[in-house]
Structure formats: C-alpha cells, structure tokens
Image 1: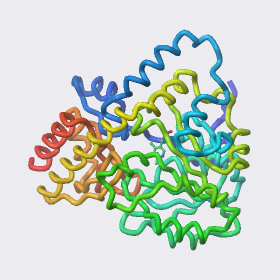
Image 2: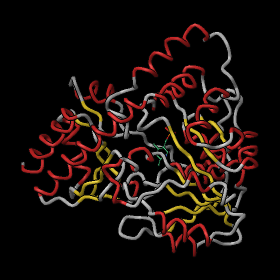
Image 3: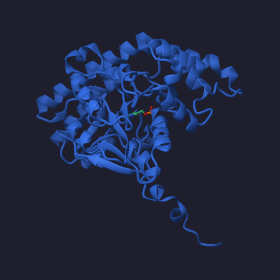
Length: 372
Ligand SMILES: *Cc1c(COP(=O)(O)O)cnc(C)c1O
C-alpha cells in the first residue's frame, strides 16, 4: 500500500480546521459513567421537546417517505412568507441555519477574502470561513458583548461578510436597535452583514421588553446587504430535524439557492417546521418555561455570589473558576453543561435553561460541587 497523507492533500483551509465540538450526547455520558436519567443542558435545545402539531405533521408525512421532498420547500416558504411579511423569493431554506452560514461563505468568500466576526462568537463562523480559504478577522469583544464600532472599523477592501449573532451564543448578549442602525449605516453596501437570529424568539419575549433587543428582519428592504438567519432548532424544539432559513434580498437568495443542494431539507423536517410555526401555544409555553428557569438560575447565582453574563437567550454563562473541573464533576453527577474555553471563556460554563425539575437538579448539583 502506498503511504499517502490524505490530510496533506486537503485544501489549505480545511487542513487547518478543527471539527466543531458538539455538546456531549446524553447516551454517551450514560454509557461512560454508568448512570441513568442524565440531564443535558449543553446545546440550547428546547427542554420541552417538539410541540404536538409538529409531531402530528411528521406522522402524517411518514407515508410519503419514498418520495423526494419538495426541493423548493414551497409550503414552508409560503407559511414563513405569510408570517413574517416577506416575499417567497427572499427566503432560502437550510438544513439547519448552519447550512445557510455555509452557503454564504461558499457563495461570497474566495480564498484570501476577509470575514469579520467577534471574539466569543458562534463557533460555526470561523469554521465556514476557513473551509473556503477565507481570512477570519476576529474583533475583540467589549465586556463580553459585540463591539460594533470596532467591527465597522475592521472593514477593509477585502471584507465580504460580517457575521453577527443577536443574541450571541455563547454569551447571550444582545444588540439594541440604535446600535444596529448606527452600525448598518457605516457598512459599505457591497459587504454582506449576516444577522444570525437563532435565539430571536427568546429575546422578543415580552418579559424582556426593557432589554432593547430588536430583530432586523424588517430592515432587509432598506439594506440590500442584510441577511437575517433564523432556525427551528431552538425555541421551536426541532434541532434534530435541521431546519433553518434566511431572509435576504431576492438576488442574494438566488445566489444562495445556487449553492444549496436540491433536497437539503427532508420532507419530515419541512412538514414539522411548517406545523411548528402555527403552534403558538407550544412556543409561548416554551418561552414561559425559559423565563422562569432563567430567573431561578440567575437568582441562585446572585445568592451564591457567582458572576454571570446577563442573557436574553435560553442559556447563560456563569463564572465558576476552574470550569473544566466543575464540568467534570457535573458530568459525574449526571449533568451535561458546556465548557466554553474554546470560545475564550475558560472560567465560565454555559448552561442551557431546562425544565423546572432539570434546573433544580442542576442547581443542587452545582451547589454541592462548589461547596465541596
Ligand atoms: C444554535 C445556533 C444556530 C442554529 O443552528 P442550526 O443549524 O439551525 O441548528 C445558529 N446560530 C447560533 C448562534 C446558534 O447558537
């Protein structure tokens, strides 16, 4: 056999990539530690699961599995178009919104082009940038949040894309309407600004009214370089099905649809997402559980004197000191949370808000570990 290093044959951007590290799966923890009833609060999933309407839609769709799905996702696009008042030709469907982030990089970033994002930002931005040979320009965060002035100042002739998560994962920080307005005015029209609104539904919860968060989906008509991405993976409880979408100007959507694989969304996912969009009761219940859980956790952290980063998402970063050690101790107690050292936050753990019973177990375990 000839000894070939296939890694050395990979294109330069891919050679230097680190594969995305997902949260530890429940089954893996239970197997490794020989425990049962483990709790996963590590991937910002909806702890209530999918809604009844989505499940019913999947069941109905099962009989059609021998057929290819609708490659244009007509029915889901129509529902999104109606709900958000955008034209169907402004929508692009992704196998998760991560898929869309990749389309953006593949379609608009050539080798050596620059892509800007913030320190402590979502790990998929560097991944999709490097994979196409793009040059990542990482702008320092300010007090854990995005420094939009510094991001605007980092734009050069080579900048093609700017990735902004609002709210951001893993920090949960958010940007206000005024900050976003001032920012967008400064960005040259040929630079695409991607506003990743994966946690939008949580951030517009009326319980958070005073926070100043705003979605920019309604601004796409005004800023033709604006791309807004959303997902069914978080508040809608369909992470396992992989459905996300973007709203952009129609020409950008046309470009994205050229790099999209024809059947990137499967038929169960399309049907479930459409049904989930109509399940307002499940969404509202999910938001309520999240708001209550967030309050429970932040109150406990305050009582215990732990610093945390205020969050409008369904997760929170709390400063525990030796986060690696506490993460391991929590695993032994059957609780999976997320260490965020790879996001530049070595002293923090990111905890997804769970159901009331899960939050109580988490706090109980954490308290014991911290006091040990
Ligand atoms: C979870 C998440 C996504 C969504 O990923 P999907 O591919 O839609 O599951 C996108 N952006 C951020 C910042 C996220 O945290």
